[in-house]
Image 1 (cartoon, rainbow, N blue to C red):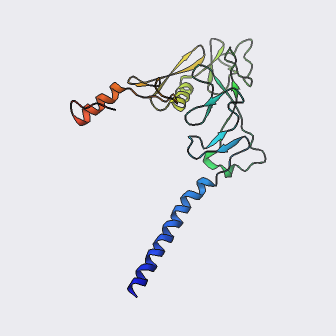
Image 2 (spheres, helix red, strand yellow):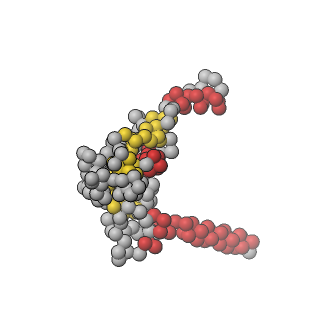
Image 3 (cartoon, rainbow, N blue to C red):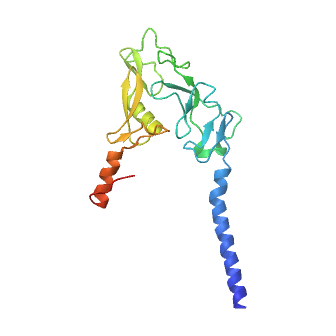
Amino acid sequence: MEKIKNGGWCIMTRVITLIILMAFILPVFAVECPPGFHWERMSGVGCVQDDCAAKGGGYTYTKECWCGDTVRACYGAVNYSGFDAKKCSSFCPISKFIGCADANGKCPNDKPTQPGCQYHNPDCAEGYQCTNNVCSPTQEYCDDYCIRMEGPHATATIQNNICQCGCEEGYTNENSDVLLCQPTKATCDAYCKSYHGGGQESR
């Protein structure tokens, strides 16, 4: 009788555990993305755009569309007409990649700036400001852009009205396949020696 009780308790425990796991796992697999996007659970964005390469771009390590460090990526609005945004919840994309900027750094959906934007009446896209009658990205915009592209140890500067991404001192992206700023060997060696004593080197 005691064995039956113990066996029943074990079965009940397993059932409860399974229910809890299902409650966490099912919502992840139930995500549905808007047209033009597909779900990738291990990506950083969740809903990954289908046609990055077809539009002349590529993917970052988080599976976000981009055009590299030196070329501005162009984004437009996502068409949610006829799609229930509740299906993608917090994973719903906020913008859609439409291509890479031309040689002058212009996107096809940029607002016209000729004969020149005016300081008191700027006609620039969101995240850009009027500087010397030219729409240029703000430092805040570039900081956010570079962190999204190359991780939390990225740095950002503005050159020729384009965000240029680099890495903090002690970090590099030269040996990274995904261009993510990673600690240099010297940084890792210093860390290992400080925490594990002299003579220790990183691998």
